[in-house]
Amino acid sequence: MKREKLLESLRLSPGRKVNLARDFDPAFTGTFEDKEAASGLLQEGIDSLSELQTRLYAEDRQALLIVIQAMDAAGKDGVIKHVMSGLNPQGTQVHSFRPPSEEDLGHDFLWRSACRLPERGHIGIFNRSYYEEVLVVRVHPELLEPQKLPPGRRDDAFWQRRFDAINQFERHLVNHGTRLVKLFLHVSRDVQKQRLLERIHEPDKHWKFSLADIRERDYWPQYTAAYEAMLQHTGTEWAPWYLVPADHKWFTRLAVARILIQQLTEMDPHYPRMSEAEQQMLAAAKAHLESD
Ligand code: ATP
Ligand code: MG
Image 1 (cartoon, rainbow, N blue to C red):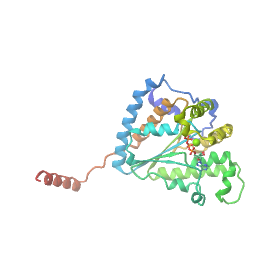
Image 2 (image 1 turned 90 degrees about the horizontal axis):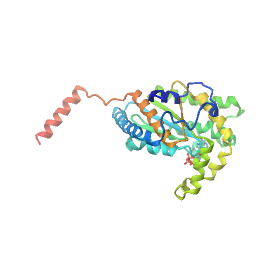
Image 3 (image 1 turned 180 degrees about the horizontal axis):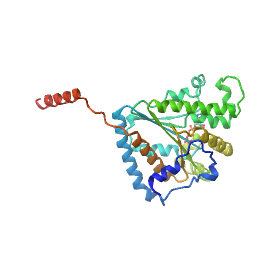
Image 4 (image 1 turned 30 degrees about the horizontal axis):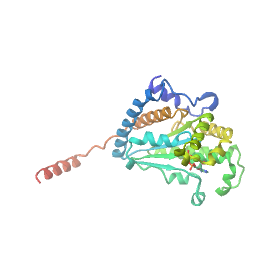
């Protein structure tokens, strides 16, 4: 499969109804056979990302926001670590979203994300995001209680209003110079189990183990339903979702690198052009230094 075709197959068409189990294979690896076959391409991808980021930073006109959502152990941390390894930390910010604080709960659900948006010239990465508000919160609606919301039923129309709010928020961002790349890392229940067991068996991975992950696993069907609704209702023309197969970590990383390169290439950042006056100033500075 051609590289571009591969990316197209991962981008969700806006409004498409999603059945994760039937239509999307978490073990998909395109035409790549294994990690070795993909490793050269991944390194190439990381180098291109670095060059594109330098231009984005120098241009200082647009921002890129990468939103990563997934079930536990789908590989969010690995994607951030590997794919971003070639980026300049000065122009990159990663923010990991935990349950909201007291201060967060005093505001609407988008507020804390708005405070963390990347500035122009920067790449922002949301490790989880405002999408938790239609995922974990939908699976555990008691989390709405401390949110001090206006009264009303917490029915489908309530969640639809949240989807609408998210779509409008994203539209606003896109209209004002921030491109969004939304990645859903799609892992299977079996592979999640293997990875959670590794966290128990391997001492070096103990620090990653959390009992909460095991508890949340019991809600797999409810999460799947929440993800499917989210993907259908918040996949838009201006901010589409990418469903990234996540059973093979090497493929996830390669696919994410390629998606980001494609997006940054479309953003087409340019080094700023110097004005006539600036060029004269540069020539004068050069003459001054040379005569020193
Ligand atoms: P890992 O994959 O390594 O476990 P993680 O992203 O799960 O990393 P944790 O600190 O384990 O990080 O978990 C963060 C927790 O915060 C998740 O359980 C997530 O559901 C929760 N969370 C994030 N945003 C919200 C929110 N708006 N409301 C409630 N819970 C949230
Ligand atoms: Mg966790």
